[in-house]
Image 1 (cartoon, helix red, strand yellow):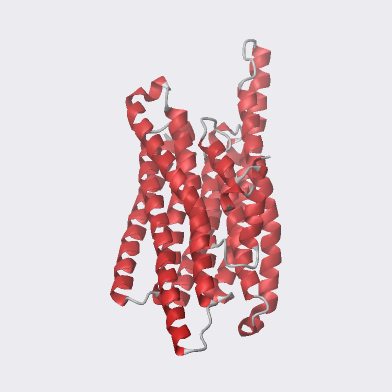
Image 2 (cartoon, one colour; image 1 turned 60 degrees about the vertical axis):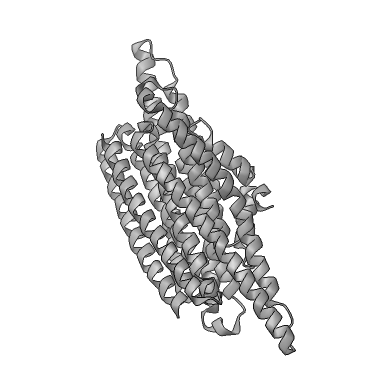
Amino acid sequence: MLVDLNIKEFANRLAAAAPTPGGGSASALAGCLAASLGAMVCELTLGKPKYAAVQSEMERARDALAGLRKDLLALVDRDSEAYDEVARALRLPKETPEEKRARQEAVGNATQFATEIPIKTAESCLAVLEQVRTVAEKGNGNAVSDAGVAAYLAHTGVAGAAMNVRINLPGIPDSARAAQIEQRIARMEAAAERLLAETRETVARRMKG
Amino acid sequence: MLVDLNIKEFANRLAAAAPTPGGGSASALAGCLAASLGAMVCELTLGKPKYAAVQSEMERARDALAGLRKDLLALVDRDSEAYDEVARALRLPKETPEEKRARQEAVGNATQFATEIPIKTAESCLAVLEQVRTVAEKGNGNAVSDAGVAAYLAHTGVAGAAMNVRINLPGIPDSARAAQIEQRIARMEAAAERLLAETRETVARRMKG
């Protein structure tokens, strides 16, 4: 599995002349790192008398981020698997009309599945960003720059996954469904932009104060 | 070393209740992943007859990104080491006036060093983003979403490193030097914003075409 590779090896695999792992897995990894950093800020807040008032909020955020981190770690591998499935379908024979039809169906199905994975990645990264906004606002002020980095990483996860959905849309046979997906990811992108802007402002304000 | 940890372990260490590894190492890692993805797009472009005209440009980008990837991989560990040095200085005794002076000097020196590392990270990530913009414009169109993800990751590296510089600035004894550093990172942030915006536009245009 990709997530069993060490950082150096993972970077090597990413840089290699094969389409997987690619931007989809990298987007899920960005979200996973964001969830991890956000959880760290919760940990650095919990148990500190100065932050006693936000104790239960930080516990909830930490637990939510732990679940999202696990989901996103799994999505790092699933994204590459899903893309490999599309590549396999594209290599099916297309000599006879029957083969052509079978190939077209296989490609359509694989592409549909390959868009569902980055949609999940975008959703999970957006959920991370929501938690991180709270953590940046109420967590330990000494770690507010870490919450800021987490926000950028989670935003990258949403924006990156959205591009990976979008590049697959022309391959989806049902155009009404494709239009629905486009609307859905555009909404997620807009929400992520807003959450990042709010978090940036909070971080800048708390770093000055 | 952190970069010898597998992805899962690295995420665990990031999430743990210790300030390192934290946002500085995560920013360097974001830049390293960006350089890797950018290099992948170069590899997927090289040797393709359709892209023969940009062959030498892609070779140059690939080589530049390989160097930056190596630098950023080293910065993942160096950032945490530099922060640990600050923490060590802060634990020095401060009973007598001599101890106080010695501690203050040690903290000042360690903090200055701890700001130099994220400055290097920001510079390297900005250099990655410059290469990625070219790769997104001229590289293999099938991988343009990967170039887009690389651009977001490199931007996160610049913005994240900048926050890690800024949170250390109050600890720098020489205020003129601190002001100089602030100007320098603000310029890098502005350049990264512009490069990301340009790359986003390019990616959107090429995905439609």
